[in-house]
Length: 481
Image (cartoon, rainbow, N blue to C red; front, side, top):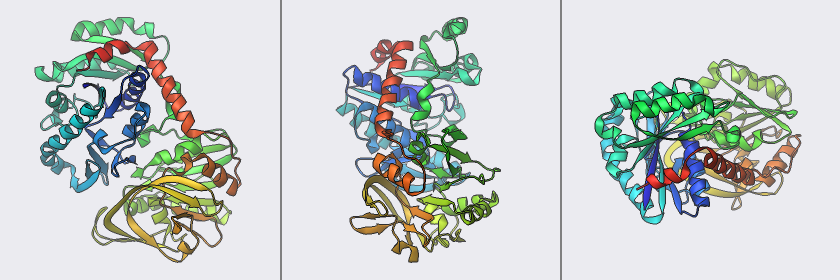
């Protein structure tokens, strides 16, 4: 019943990937192991086995452990809905939407469910590998902290600090963290890791020894950049490359300001016949695009305004006039309709917003949130498919008579009269190899025999082997208590 925590000397230093790799390495060594992240901030969520939602990174880490994701693995999830406010999900269920300044007052009350979930995991597994959030060096956020040192001290969990050498300044990252932490927090840190090194790691020997000398912390290794990291689901939309794949069939996905569950795109990006482009703010939808995907959003009406501000509504209309295809997933499906109503102000100010009008449907936001793993049948191909739903809002209208899929015989989603515009609430559908191949053929693309899920398993094994080669994994596991 032991635990070890990986914290970062900054944001986006590769904590999630390190935890996934260490989880798989521990599993291959014969441990029963589980991941844990006390507090996560992400709109990329997964539906857990117990019917709640957690960060997508913890779902990937659970896969690395060979277990089902559970809400105890990420007891506090913050899902940003605006620049100043987030939905707060506790042990898988939404409890409130709060402004950033008000979350500080709520935070101390969340330590109890965090520790409750942590202790439940510790009681079930040999080892729990914990991921911090952001950086403990953000000492202005230390009061009431549940994500980094506040948790580590409450749970008596030893900490390894990770620095990202790829962005530069890694010596200052780690030595500076020690300089700003109070003595009690520093005492929790047992060592450090240098992550994302490109080139010959021996070139950093002097810097490595300098960090050891300045901090008196033990170094556990230098991790070379892991080239296949892009084949695993990304947690942060900023990590999505602008373009992936060299195929001739061109897909453009809109990088909405509150984009959610964007790992829907990963299986398509790995198809050899596909070239996937993320269209970002200030860019136009390329004229030679075959399929435009409007992905999920944490703020449908807000992202409708964002979409129009980029001129993408005009681009979409031109794309359809050229005979292109459009698919909206979840929030993207809602945007394709004629109207989105939010009378209770569940995603922002109460009111309604005109949709894009490419599907004859309307959506009304409702307090009940649908969180479920789903088995469906694709209407066009008749193939069984699997995915998950994670949304508020009910959508209905004339185009629902042409379903995208069927769930227990009931229609799901909608298709336009000419068949070129499709909408669905089903996330994760493209991870289903049979459906993905059928869908690509339907819209004129070349399908392959890509086994996406099996490929993720191969990459996790390779990641574990990568860490075994460059880190003192035995020493890290020995630290756990």
